[in-house]
View (spheres, one colour):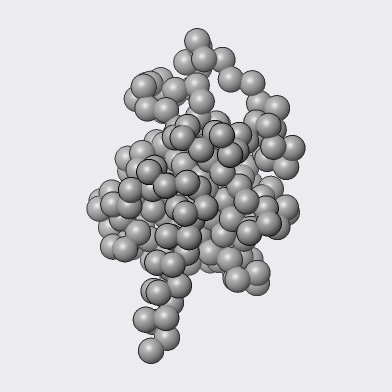
Length: 194
């Protein structure tokens, strides 16, 4: 796992450690020390710790004017033992919401497992973001991750599934990647309203 880097293709547009409104502002990365690990596996030093022992993140892009953030995750999303949604919310989402962000795309290509608990944190987050016409999308989840999320009934609070799987987002610029997700979510909402 140590050779899986966060996506770096958008660094010409955004670097979280250089954004004064980012929760990772002024973070210094040691490219030679692999200090963080998930279980017994060292991970690349560019991943940001969020308080969880099994889940790490990277803020890939934030557009304050258009109110969206693109995040990438690695590890095991474990709400059952560690309440990882709480860490994600406290370490990243709440801080960006305070800056006006209300739409979050979570790239889960490297989230290897999901262990659900209850949906209370997701419901609360959904209600908070809904006040501002916001949402969360989980993109490119593995099928077994999606199945576990569905068992926990997260589909009522988070967008994930068929149309958000297997998207080739890395070939796009950040705004185009976001607009693709926004279009999918808008079309899904339109279908549900008929």
